[in-house]
Image (cartoon, rainbow, N blue to C red; front, side, top):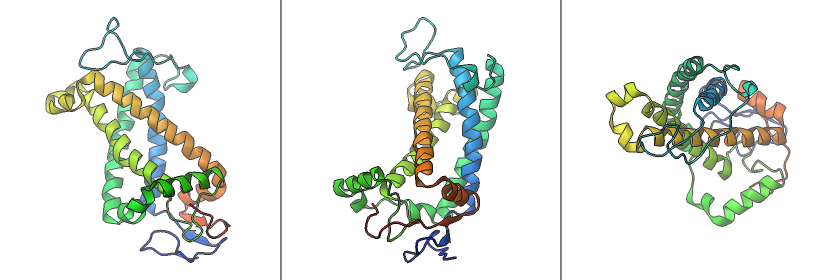
Amino acid sequence: MAEDESYGGARPSARAGEMIRRHRLPTRIWHWVNVLAIVIMIGSGLMISNAHAHLYWGIYGANYDPSWLDPPRFPGWMTIPTDYNLALARRWHLTFALLFAFNLALFMLLSLMNGHVIRDLRIRAREVSPRHLWADVRAHLKLRFHDADNPAAYNILQKLSYVGVIFIVLPLLVFTGLTMSPGMNAAFPFLLDVFGGRQSARSIHFICCWLVVAFIVVHLLLVVLAGPINEIRSMITGKWRVPAEKRGEGA
């Protein structure tokens, strides 16, 4: 098994069909804890949305105030709990929000310490050139997801999506969630100023939630297209089989 711990994935010379180690243990633990936490938070969040399905900007928001968006009422099979129970939904949501927030903070810290961010997620100037971005888009449309010269490396679309979600969208979810808490407002009143009021924070929270849902849908689709057994095994055991792709056709 070809392995390069300093890189965290395959050596550039890894051959098609070769089993390599792709994901470190902290990444795998973070991934599966997030799966649990996010599923429960989305389900309970939809129940909370059902309790007052209106979104506002600013400080105030009540039944007769003009809303910028009125989300639909979500069916019971999508919510946690399945029957209307706002108090229980809040308990589920806040409990797993704590797990999610500490898990995110620990992952960020470990990723900085072990070099995962710099090594695997660093975005280089040449990668965001229009020519390079378009080449990566075309490769994805042709169902080619890996660089033949370095198959375990993240392509630029993966880097942009992962960096955007991990370092922008998820922290926004955490801090806007804190802003909606009256107790946190008393301890840290500046949060209300940062997000323009509790109702603005609530709107941003829901926008970020749907961005995460969109990311999950695209992520699952690409896992299926790239080979679900190989991809899921790599996130459970860390071992990944290098796919057979023609050299030079990757993004």
